[in-house]
Amino acid sequence: MNRDHGVAIITGGASGIGLAIAKAAVGEGWKVLLADLTQPALDAAKAQVDAIKAGVTKTVVMDVANENAVMAGLKDCEAGFGPVRGLVNSAGIGRQVPFFETSVKLFREILDINLVGTFAVAKEAARLMKVHGGGAIVNVASVSGLRGNIERSAYGASKGGVVTLTQVMACELAPLKIRVNAIAPGPFETPMVQEMHTVATREGWMQVVPQRRYAEPEEVAGAAMFLLDDSKSSFVTGHILNVDGGFAAHGLLPKYP
Image (cartoon, rainbow, N blue to C red):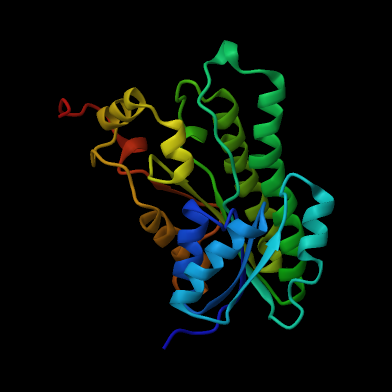
């Protein structure tokens, strides 16, 4: 029988990795608060999660880049639902743009959502966890925050910031029994990635990913669930878990295909 873990907030929960994590979470005994930009998208996502386990999911419309919206969205999230003990920061955007074509406006927009948004939600969620004696935070970074992937100056910088933020948070929040880790996905199949990755981009990834494929969101979700679960990862904090088919480890590879 799955244990009752408490409530997990999942930003970007209406699609992609966030939705896959939400589905996995309810299957493992979590209640879930899905946060995303629009109610129609949240309603559609909630219907999918309810099909797995009904009555354990709530939704909130929230722009993670807006501090006031974050504070308002999480202010009463525990009322009649339960204590917040988990957070997955999955909200994010990506653009594949050459360096000289990346505007300062775009750079700031990506950092505001991917990095500042991660910080803002984590701060409010950690306040709630502190009251209940601890919890676990999983930030979604990227291998683009660990390696110099071309045409990702803004995206890579934002995810590199998430990596460092994760490590700082892990050290500062450890006395509060709040663990903070990150997953760093490689290429994976989501609507955002399908929009970003051209045929040439996909061929490029196949040359450098030893497993020679893109991950499915469910594979990334499994890593997040491990890091959320105190019964499995209670002594893991400040760790960046690559979910990348071997990309970050590769050296010389056989020619593809």
